[in-house]
Amino acid sequence: MKTPVSKRLEQNIAYLKENMAVEQNFDVIIRELKFGNVNAALLFIDGLTNDQIVTLLLENLTEIKPEDIGTHTFDKIFHRFVNFTEVNKAEYLEDVVQKVLMGPQALLIDGEDRAIIIDARTYPARSPAEPDLEKVVRGSRDGFVETLVFNTALIRRRIRDPRLRMEVMQAGLRSKTDVVMCYIKDVANPQLVENVKKHIDQIKIDGLPMAEKAVEELISPGSYWNPFPKVRYTERPDVAATHLLDGHVLVLVDTSPSVMITPTTFWHHLQHAEEFRQNPTVGVYLRWIRYIGVAISLFLLPLWLLAVLHPNLLPPALKFIGPAKNAAIPIFLQILIAEVAIDMVRLATIHTPTALATAMGLIAALLIGQIATTVGLFTPEVIMYAATAAVGTFLTPSYELALANRLARLFLLVMVAVLGLGGFIIGVAAFIILLATTRSFGVPYLWPVIPFNSGAIKGVLMRTPVAMNNIRPSALKTKDPVKQHVPAPAGKPLGRRRGDNNK
Image (cartoon, rainbow, N blue to C red; front, side, top):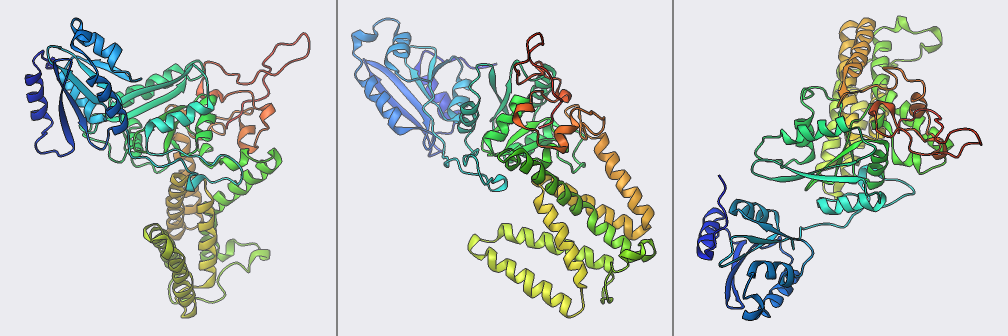
């Protein structure tokens, strides 16, 4: 049962002081005022309040004369004297507390049973900058930041459609984190929209300090131990806008610069904005270089280990594959040590100050790698193949997919070491079955390969030219499948389909 705002100002102040611990919290401030012979109180959080705007509002209130608000005091103050853009009303003290904790200010007036909520908040924010993980040679240099309203503005700047929806919800019983679901109303599948909204509404946890990652795990249940990402993260507004136009649903979480794209397939994680910032021919080349690099990161080391452990499987022309001389440590153990060492270097680079990162890399490459081969602990081939696989891992656009592929590679290595050729076949089959049975919000993870879609697979293999990319992915079951109506010759209908592209 909620507590209504009382007409007695003293009673309201007492409630707010108790529930917001004004005496203990130095940043929770109640400013008692008097204007036009009316007592009032302004409640706000220091640090979340735009002091300049609030100062101007207070100056305007001090100019009120008693005769200006003799009757209908609340309505006159609300409509005439609180001259600010974002102003609302609150009838319950619990709502007042919740709004103030989010940043807005609450004005309570003696003799009135409603409060005025003034949204003159400000959050600590950095300027939009190009994301480190999604850099392009040519293209926009702005990126999402930790402030939610900035992120929604970056999307609206690119899609000026009145049917673009930004539905805000709150998740976290204590954190009250703002979560925005973004989609285009006449494009996105209504069932997908309702499915995402239902899962967000069902979040019943104290707080979301880890923001988007916690939300992902809570809205995609049953996938905790599946390392392959069910959503795609992006920090680029242009990438987010492109997926909106394709019919995807975005989830934005306050305090996070990453936006979740739902649903996604395995192939979405292999695409990069650079492909679409270059000529289509160059884009196809870049895409296939990336595909080859990802395949190398997955299969190169297990295949090499298989060739070393079972040289009889090699044809005569490939007999040169394998170490020239044996080291003191078995090959399989060398590979495991190299894999762990690469991860240790990667983590050390993340936690090392920028000024020392280069020195740390030199130490890892020269002192550790060179000395290990010199003293005979490692064979040079192990270092070469492990480094090549690591390059393929870093080449993967999606950081989450790169980590998942790394675990898949380790699994294949263990299978090869234990069962040889049969282990490699079983491991690859298990890898494909896992991907084939994975679904992202109802969409098959390997679509359009499994299930096969001849029209959509062209968009996976090639970077389709913009002029030919006029059909949205059929797996999304969008309300409007055509996104580019191409003028047709006389007697033929508009919007002729030229294939189902998967961007």
